[in-house]
Amino acid sequence: MRIRVINPNTTASMTTLIEASARAVAGPGTVVEAVTPAMGPVSIESHYDEALAVPGLLAEVIAGERDGVDGYVIACFGDPGLDAAREVAAGPVVGIAEAAMHAAMLAGRGFSVVTTLGRTAGRAHDLAQRYVAAGGCRGVHACEIPVLELESDPTVLPRVVDLARAALESDGSDVIVLGCAGMAALCADVSKQVGVPVIDGVTAATLLVQSLVTLGVHTSKRDEYARPEPKRYTGTLAAFGTT
Image 1 (cartoon, rainbow, N blue to C red):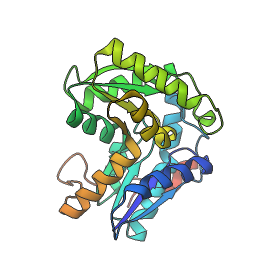
Image 2: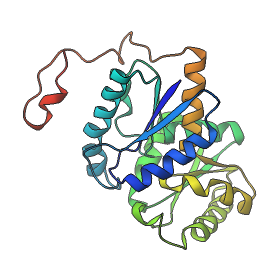
Image 3: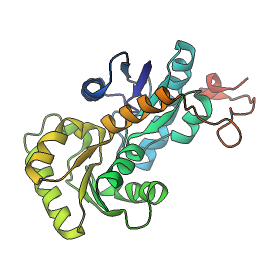
């Protein structure tokens, strides 16, 4: 089984960290390959960034289909391009916010999201409304550390721990969801220090894709996720035309 984990931003060092987290939970016989798109933003911290990350992400899915990839993980907490990727992929495609939120609801009655920047909280709330029942997401809290500083800022772990503790208290939640792929390596340490389950979407999504492929479940092509109709694209996007 081959699972392609796509880091929708173009920072290769983050892709390396994401790949390590995904490989750590993959089962025997599962090959995990993390990829960095050839185009897009260096980090995704706005709706603008997210929109412009999607073409590079889709190019990796299209390439994966040619290479025989069995399933895909979209390793950005905004789950950019998820529906479009499902249209072009034969196998399952899972976003890390989607996987983390579903997993959190199996571990408790409500969860709090601890994320990077406050300006992304609205997107997390939007996804929670899509993925889980009302009241499942009790709150979204930002540590105000930019994505690209997660690797280098020595205060990241204590700040995330402090914020998680405060979120549990203020929200009355049972579980913490880490709201950025760049936080994946913090999961075990945060959980140990706050004393509740902490869900990282990279590992959750990797295992969910692996399970779906094992079950022989693919993305339904009956209606909305059918392949796009043949269409010519122009300009910079000419290569994305469908046949």
